[in-house]
Image 1: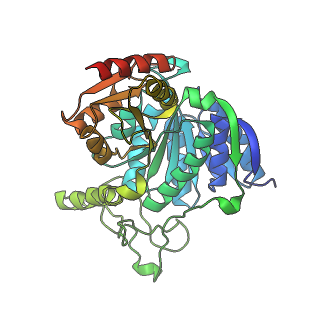
Image 2: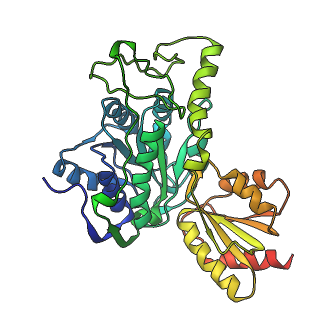
Image 3: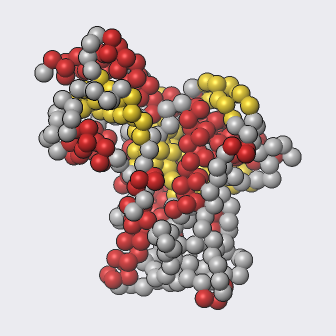
Amino acid sequence: MKPAVLTGEHFLTGDSACAEGALAAGCRFFAGYPITPATEIAEHMSKRLPEVGGVFIQMEDEMAAMAAVLGASCAGAKGMTATSGPGFSLMMENLGLGIAMETPCVVVNVQRAGPSTGLPTLGAQGDMMQARWGSHGHYEIIALAPASPQEIFFQTITAFNLSETYRLPVLIMADEVVGHLSERVLIPDPSKIRLESRPRPKGRKDRFRPFHPGANGVAPMANAGEGYMVHFTGLTHDERGYPVMTAEAHTEMVSRITGKIRANLDKIIQVEEYRLEDADVALISYGISSRSSYSAVDEARARGIKAGLLRLITVWPFPEEKIRELAGRVKCLITVELNLGQIHLEVQRCAAGMAPALLVGHAGGTVITPARILEEICGASRQ
């Protein structure tokens, strides 16, 4: 068998780097259905997984793919699927099932311009609110936004670690540009890669309660078939996993699946600050749009305008406290994203009128240029 981690320097697309990151994270099961611009992730995994003793399966559709990944995870495997907008929509029901069952897995959405079939081969960031609220009911989700092939490699490992630690599906919200962009990717030695595994049960198997939370709010997870009593359902259930049709039981269950995220925000949320120390104008961006934003900030500084960038690495949970802190000390906030203002609405909500909140965005199909962002920065600085 070939090594799971191909140590060294490589020239990879973002999609291939994502697949290699999954393998480095210990992913040994992939189920998916072809869709542009995420197909290359499945193609890469179809070649590499058999080389490392893993399983690749092409399912009949995205609903089945998501169900297969959940099943593999319940049996103890680290599993992943990858898709784009239309397939992401089809996965939403079983995403909710994974949240209710508290089942670790990773879902990659290489976003393209929509709605519907849209522009299959061109990029956008229009699925960001769907990532947060695409399934029904109330829940918390973790979603990461990579800005380069190198970053998607490491973010895929991070996504698996977060998924295992907090027992839930974790989303990687990439975009077509990052997915198809080819750049140098450095893959470290496996000894340098920190991996997390789901909390495991201890004690008597006949007394095990599969949804009794531990100290950090996360319940230990037994694998189906190893002797512990396990029962998985999408219905409201108690700590034994059995359905209980009462408002009280539902409050307890939803409090558990939301509380384990809300209680650990400081461990989950990641942002990157660039030249924000003395900034008057703060850009807020993520993914491919953040790369144009860096250039715009540097050009604005060259013109004497104090601009800075807050790059969202974790988009969900949203870094509300950081946005509020920024709004309280800058003259203007500018959200830069490839949609018509999905994350911008969150920025406005958190700014709460403390600073004007502007948007540089469009519906997708091409990247936002540094010149367009700089134009908005210059306009904001004159106000």
